Image 1 (spheres, rainbow, N blue to C red):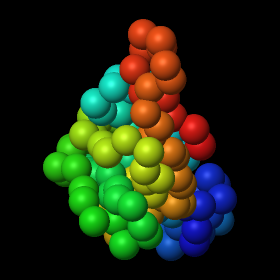
Image 2 (cartoon, rainbow, N blue to C red):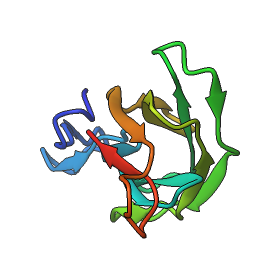
Image 3 (cartoon, rainbow, N blue to C red):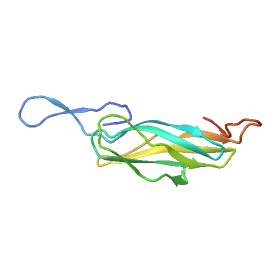
Image 4 (tube, rainbow, N blue to C red):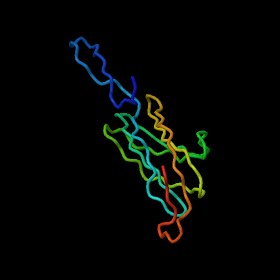
Length: 136
């Protein structure tokens, strides 16, 4: 069973009522996280996570390498069956630095780890009122 394909495998119900198929339980599924709003001092990370019916928590891991030196606090998104947007998670960052990040979701069936992604947190362009900018 793989939640990375975005599909749930089915199994036959063993209750003697015939060959009905029912969805197999699965860990939470993660849509690729993205950097969001930025300022001259911080950045936001966002993701969409489907709990797939089981109480699910998530956090972001981030840092200057895939060792992910820091993580955000764990957030409970409940047990729904549809994608749940993560609340905005703000990070304080150093300018002119490449950051790696990923989202990690947990439920009773296991842990699902999102793919590694990167962005560069640049210093503000001269005369740019928006402050810093991100490239990914």
